[in-house]
Each structure stands twice: as structure tokens, then as C-alpha cells.
Length: 511
Image (cartoon, rainbow, N blue to C red):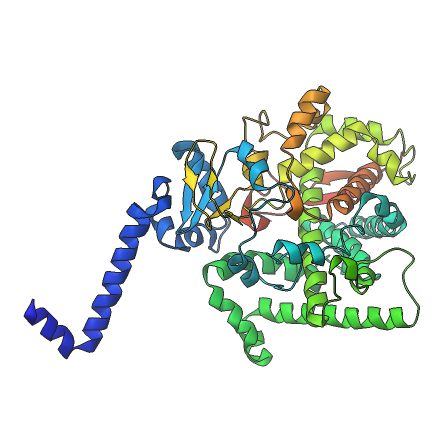
């Protein structure tokens, strides 16, 4: 023993290495066998750090990245309703627990250490403190209320018409349309005009691949890497000339931030000149303080973060939901013909227009849209929360201590066969059953999450989907251009990233 001590004293680097190895070995033993979370099954590597998740999520080829969501589904079916997800995280599969974890005034809060690192740290989306979160969303919550959506219909209709005109250009040129890019561009222009009063012009791009749409498509998948290696965000602190050489995504992100900052300046100048849009906008509301609710107008960075997260949340998710819904309509002749027949009752001619409330009342269109949201699950990943003081007991009786990160995934609810029969079948009829059965299913329709942290844009998203699906199906006879089910398989890159493209030939209907 003395010889070992003498050797370590004579070689400080060896002593440091020994301490390092002993500490990590002790930590590993504790985390795997002695931690309060050791009662939960799962990969031992998951107990040691974020890198088990990173292994399944970070890759370069379709089917070899974004797989944690599907790996967890397979493990839950073998190992039970709760799994060890990390050194301080548990993942739950039991649908009944969802409404305890995500409910109004829930004490399960967002983990600030996770959400701040993922970008836009001053936005409402990233705010973890429930009091400040309530203050931050004070100007936005009434704006997104359903009663205010009717004022947006003329603006949204303009973009639908513009999208249809662009489809005509593709048809005349003998080119198929990539519907992911097209429908994300449609959603981008709708939500950006709602934000700024003026759209980003995504539909004008010759291939629907404008800078904003490209940035969000590239940026969201990078969050898997940032979560596993948070120090990567420090790259944004480096000189721009250097980061632009290192990463095209960072370069595009900087350009989008500058673009958003210029749009904010333009809006403020227009507001000061008394020139506001004819419809309510997000920017207008963000610039009005609400002292009685504790809302203070953010600084320029805060405004930029708010706007960019709002546009991001309303672009990819709505675009993906519309694309997946349209694909399943077009590939299923029974669904297609039944929906078209119903649409003709309020849109007798291809170019007819119907007030939004009339579209909303169509039962089969409503069923198709609900099924599209369930089936696409455009925000499929888990949304973890922190267990409040006192801990929580899971439905199976196991205890999770306070401060533990705990989460569930929307995809695991929507594809749970104990709730939705044949969940991998696109079946709008499930939403046309007896009222009590539809009510049961609706309780587990969680595409927009639930509780105080649910998506503020739910009413806008529904309105966009009713108008996009309703008018596009009524006006065009879409034909698939070589797209197969294998192309529509996806990896979970925060939002679905598809293995191929949905290509369609958009031919105008004559009647």
C-alpha cells in the first residue's frame, strides 16, 4: 500500500487519473444500482448520461437517426410502463398518467436546464417559471382565442389562392410538386403574416425552398445534437465570419435572426406612423404592456425570440400535418371520394368559397383533420417536466422523487392500441362513432399537448388545416408521382423528418 501511495505522490498525473477513474466508477455504481431511479428498467448506459439517447438520435442516414422515440416504444412493450431514461429522468408510457403530468395549473414544471439551451431562451416557449410564463403569454392568449380567428380568414384565403396559383405553374411546366416544401411554405406565409402583418413570401420561391423554410427544416434536427452537447451553442458566440465558414445552418440562422430583427424594426416604424394591418397581429399585441397582468414589453432580443419561436411552431408542425393528411386522402380512393362529395355541398364549384364556420361544420372533413393530427403527430417527441416537491407515485405504485425529469411522448399516446384501435391505419371513421366513444378518444387527442403549456396556436392551426385541406382537395385532382409508403416513413428529429418526398401532380378539377 505504501508503495502505491509513493508512486501516486511521485506521479501527480497518475494520481489525478486514479481519482478520476475512481470517482466515475463510484458514480456509475450509484446511478445503476443505488439511485432511487434504479428501480426502473432500461439501458444501463441511459443511467450514466445523455449519450444513450444521443446514440439512437444522432445519425446521418434515414432510419439510423431520430430513433429514440421508436426504441422507447419497443422497450416499453417489453419492460413495462416506466423506463429509466437518464441519470435523472424517467419515461412513462401509461396513457392515463398523461393527464396527471400535463394538466392546467400543473406543478410539473419545465426543466430550465434543458429548455434554455435549446434556443430562444427569452421566449414564452422556453420560460420555465410558471408565474413568468403566465405573464409572458398574457398578450398572446386572447389573441389566439377562437373568437379572434374569424378576422384572419381573408388573409389566410389569400395565401391559399396564391398556393393554388403556384400549383398551376408547376402543372403547366410538367413538374410535380414537393408537398412538404409547398405546405410548409403555405404555413410559413400564414403564420408570418399573422406575426408581422406581412408574410415572408415563402410561396414566391420557385421551388418553395425559401431561406426561412430551409432554416427551420435544418435547425430543428440539430436540437438532438445541442441537447447531447450543449457547448455547441457557444459557436454562436464566435465571430460570424468564422461560424459562417464552419456551419451553413448557423449562417442561415444568423441571416434569419437579422431578417426577423429588420421585420420588427419595420413593424415598429409602421406602427409609429399609424399604419397597422386590418387584422390583429402578434407584434402589435407584444408591443402593448399589460401592467395588471405583469406583462412588460420585451427588449428587441425578447421580441425576436418570441416571433421566431411562434413562426417555427406554426410552420413545420402545420405543414407536416397537412402533408400527411393530404397523402392519406389521395392514396385512399374511398376517403378521397367521400370527402370530395361532402366538400361539394358547401363548395359546389372548384372555385367556390365558403365561410370558415361552414367548413368547420362538415363532419367528415372534421374527422379527416382529427385523424390527420393523430396520425401525423407532428410534435411527436416527449416533453419532459420536473417532478414537484413531495415526488409522485406512478399508476403502478412506483415512486419518483422530486426534481426528477419525467416525460411522455404524444406519439406514444396517439399510437397506443389500448386507446386507438388499429392505430397505424388512417381511419377518419373512428371520429364518427357514438358520442361517448368520440369523447373517450378526444381525451387522448393530444396533438397540441394539454394543460397550461399546451400550444397557444391550436385554433389557428385548425383553421389553416380546414382551409388548406378543404380547398386543395376541392380544387385539385392530385395524383401521386412515384411516392411510396417507404418515402413517408419518418425519423423523429423533434418534428418528423421523412425518408423521401411526397411528390404530386396538381391537376385542376373541371367540376
